[in-house]
Image 1 (cartoon, helix red, strand yellow):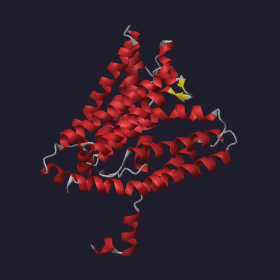
Image 2 (cartoon, rainbow, N blue to C red; image 1 turned 90 degrees about the vertical axis):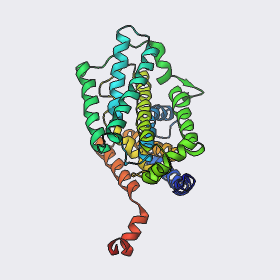
Image 3 (cartoon, helix red, strand yellow; image 1 turned 60 degrees about the vertical axis):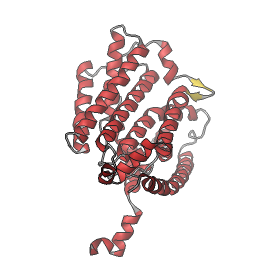
Image 4 (cartoon, rainbow, N blue to C red; image 1 turned 30 degrees about the horizontal axis):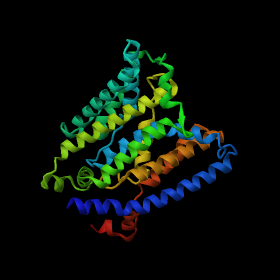
Length: 329
């Protein structure tokens, strides 16, 4: 399959998906406003936006890994977030400038992502098992090195990224999430690298026969996911002015939900950044709305689970089952 044909096939279903997600987001806003009178208040908007960047960066990284095929998945993203935070906090405690420590944290995130990429694509360990193992390893290391205690004492100027706003928009959204999303969208839709990613996700054997370095490309996607998780860690630390060893707990599953709900096919080859951003807005809207309505956390998880089931249900496959095409094969 040519890269141009693969790109066309990836974009066409995404147009319909984006329209569906826009409608679903609108419905979510209406329902949450009915459940809680506080949801549509102007004071709630900055709080909702404040919550978006950390989860959004993880979701973008997850989108890239899944889109590249394999099938690929990164269940260690939340643990990387936690471990990078602990490492940055430790360096700062040793007297390293906070921004230099953040730079080292991004390099650490890339290194942890490289470990995942090598385990999955070179040692051929299934991505689910490999990243599940590194999730426990990275998360356990974060807790062991801190004895489960957060690291605080960050300078006040570090809060500029996570707590302050420009033109009413949180700096983490305006200067981190939006630029990253735009760059990744351009990369996937306007560059040769993006076409190669889609081609690998559609048919890795055909991509290999076409001369594409499939293994190298997929390893680089895990590295990029690790970098995005490290950036999410920096935003989280700047928001709370503390590095918590459990900061990323549970976020890996939410990032998978966002990527798949956004239209990224779980086996790769189809997906895009606009869908991921819309799915992020939907998940955040539901979570904040349910919290404001004092709905229990169990119900919140249930809603996310239902969305995930709905998002991975392929209408075309169900039509094949109902028509008997699958059973006749």
